[in-house]
Length: 114
Length: 111
Image 1 (cartoon, rainbow over the protein chains, first blue to last red):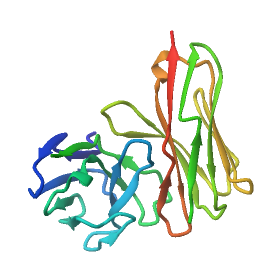
Image 2 (image 1 turned 90 degrees about the horizontal axis):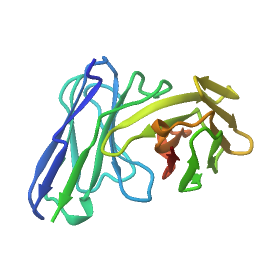
Image 3 (image 1 turned 60 degrees about the vertical axis):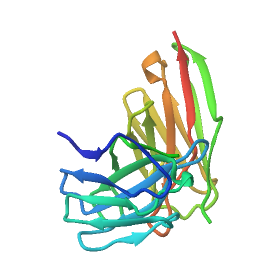
Image 4 (image 1 turned 60 degrees about the horizontal axis):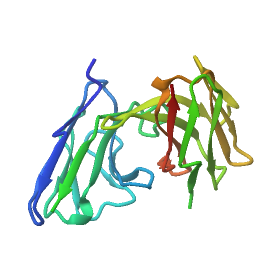
């Protein structure tokens, strides 16, 4: 039972480079989320997708784009990485678009932008 | 704007002690509150979810309470073990159906 799978687990980028973080869930969940976690702060929502074909901005969307490729997959793209985007990124999913049920998380991607 | 605070930021106790972690939130209009555990280099694991209509939830040695009116939740860990060492995060689902997170309490259980 894989749950939520994120790739890669670690990445170092140079300023200005682009990359895509991949996320897939096998629980048939409707909703998927991307968060970033910075030291001393709570997780902050970047983007979310309430259902296949829809995406919405969260608290900190600037510098990111997302694609809900299908019900299973939700990718996060950094078009031109900046040092301020150095963070740990988490993908999550939940059964309902209102997330009344619990959320399940991937293991995270530690991204460093130099 | 909903804000979630967890105090203390870090806690170290001897093995076997009972302990309480605190979570407070500024807006009582929440749908639920979740407690998560995060181990170094790993993802988050949901421990307990309390719906806004509930007062507490229990799972094994863990008990979480919720007092919406005062904006507080506690996570009680009984008979702590070294394996309980982790960072504990609480998150509330606000009126916009978004999860708002605390910064976490880093717990160390000393053998």
